Amino acid sequence: MSVDTASEPRGTLTIRTLAMPGDTNPAGDIFGGWVLSQMDIAGSIHAVESVLGRVATVAVEAMTFIAPVKVGDVLCIYTRVERIGTTSITIGMEAWARRNRLADRVKVTEGRFVYVALDEYGNKRKIATT
Figure 1: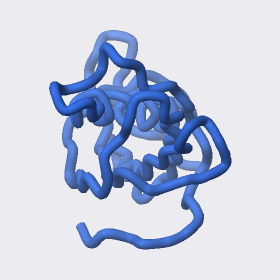
Figure 2: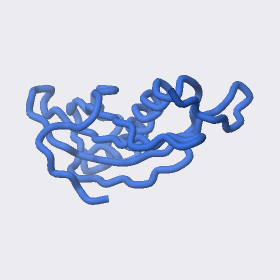
Figure 3: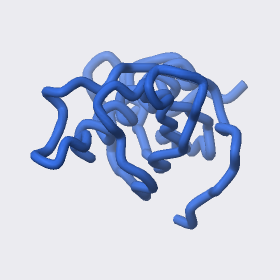
């Protein structure tokens, strides 16, 4: 995945969360796994709304860490549908940090996650097309 250097986020703002001290490594940066987790949550929200039902994460196709997230940053995750298949949906995401909870924004991560649509029994189901 090539790093996109756009100055504005692409997609829909799906979640915002505050980076806290308990989410840091010894250097004071937020763990990459925490950022990945927040992106997975945002991606699944968008996927559920798009396929009108339950989903499960099946793959992280790409993940690029561009800049560190610091304690006190507001992490904003923007999502967009990149592809809808028979049973799966691919969500592209960008994570942007608002430094010091102000309007200053910096792109910190981008990724692409794949979710599979599930029925009420947890089995794969076809995604209805409209």
